[in-house]
Length: 484
Image (tube, rainbow, N blue to C red; front, top):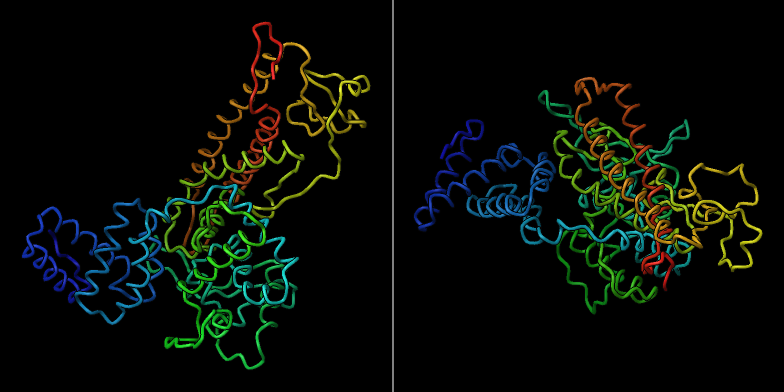
């Protein structure tokens, strides 16, 4: 074991003592090596447990799988208890959930439950009463802000009361609680704390500011002062800082929202719950699928190093597959057309009405391959391939097997192309040339990245359209006719 933390001499000595304690407790040498290596990583990344580097350590631990993630978080907490460091409380609070709930946090909810929650939030915003709005407005803010701007839960909860600003050029900005820092080495990225936002987010925050009482004293947008009013307490005995809202308190509020609103008001009883940290993943994945480059994503997300994004690329294929599935189900039901241009949850509904056709209707419709065209304005809206068209009605009167194969072959081909396109998107991103000193990146590479992302989204929409035409259950007789 090497104890070579020359920049942190006192911690280096303390780590030797901690290693001796492991050995004297008759742990194996292999176990002690793992403990020492894990703590060394934490000391190095956190720059000797500096509070300014706490977000970097949290991000660093989060990128690993269960085993290593558990080791670094757990042994760091034990070491901090051992040495009684001045910043121990803050680091222990951040690291403890990373090993206690690591298996739960690694798995994101099913995409259909994410979209369902977004539908609930949208409807709730428009239909809630005054009491519900005042109580659950932090949930609304969290969802609307952090699914677009990849904030950590701690950053969201520490937003200042006057965190948004409208400038003279009618642009809107939000200041987030990150220490603005210049790069310290060639691999570091400038940390930005002021980000541009859209008018809707600005107005959401301003609405909440107007809801705060006139004698509201905390400097933070959300605080225990407003939270405890909605708790069923006979007597308020809370002794800690009342000017902030802790993550545990926000989690309790989110649990209550699921119980009273999602399950109680909207009657969605069996859903996977979104956790406060999940939205950061959603925002990163959406930015990647839209063709944002790694430097832009890192600056938005407060990453110190580009390599930190590797953890999020693992979710991209899952998001693409899930998005296609949900969109195909919506197409199957009412031909909703979803667009990802403004965010991962944007839904645009077409105005044309679809109905169930009867056999007599087909006499007036245009026959096409394995079905009929329902477009009265043909060929002005024709896309060339009926399988990708809103106006196509799949109804093969003969050769049903061939018709199904015609659809499934196309779906399988698009599936392979989507997978290849995601790999190409990642390859272009990882091979872009950046100058971290000047924040320069190649505009040619960015154009290629944007073009690749647009093509990926086009393929995903095509596959969703094709999949919506394939019957979920069907049987085919030997003569090729359909049997239901």
